[in-house]
Length: 419
Image 1 (spheres, rainbow, N blue to C red):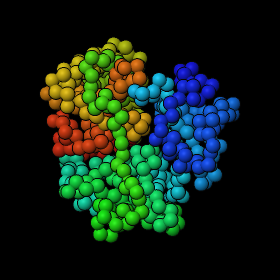
Image 2 (image 1 turned 90 degrees about the vertical axis):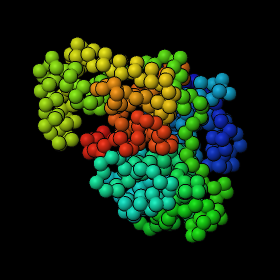
Image 3 (image 1 turned 30 degrees about the horizontal axis):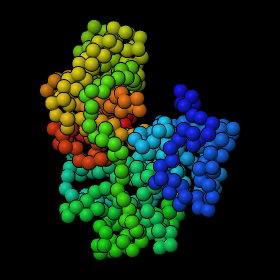
Image 4 (image 1 turned 120 degrees about the vertical axis):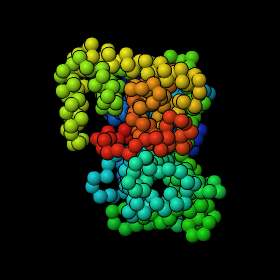
């Protein structure tokens, strides 16, 4: 489907935003005609078979190299620019070179750890929490201050900043910093500062500061103009508000089969009451605390659901009713639909409350994404813990149904981090 949208000449179907082109010119100086260069390298990538598709992006290498000798990679995405008549746009220039790192640090959430030596997580997070405006950084029932919410927040904030090329590095003065997106009690931006490190890492965490303050704060002002900027998420008002006039299409198969482990177990038991095989699997799920065993059992249940259409339709009807209730709630109060950022797809979405077990109690969240066609796609469901972590990347959720104090800390999602 994507291949059919791509044309032979890049500029015939791709809009080149001025800001992204400025970044390209900064990364690739001394090129006479940047549009011609992109057209030529895109055509070459097509002939060589090096154009690829990943996470809603089309990527291809260009002739210019990163510092490690690998090609700089260009990303294009389907366009949402109101001023563009072209269906795709130039979205990202990937010139980032990963430093050497110890084995085992993989996944989007580990980019900060790959970038720099942070020291013990507990010390790093407690220093940031102490500096930042007070808010709950743990879910209800956490035995001690683990800062689980803050850890997720800073990891994926850094990931987003990398995508936007907002991690500031002063090579001359051997200094690096990024805007954490958090503020202190005076609403001053808090920056994370880094100095050179030896060995497996290029950088070492130094301290958190505000611009112009004692210590690193003065160095931030001296090294960077403009100062490091916080991540940007919103590009259109539709990222913030759910339009009830638009059609919502739900991927029921993905939600009920691939995401069956996120449905409340009591709901599964109620809807599977006429299936001895399903109840047997659910009984085993109740009985085990081994998350690998649970993962295997949920797969067995998903396989059964694919074969038993009556059972699938019972669960689908339950989900359809919960979604219709959510839409009525959003009509009553637009704040019930909460904006969020999904790191894996690098995309914005809205979270809608689902009450699958009891109408008076929200137990899961529906992830709704606005498509270029103008329709909404109900992509998946999240547990409330996952929903809060995704929503908190933008701001502290201002909603009666999604609060840190109402979500119990759990280890049940070790195999399902929702990254």
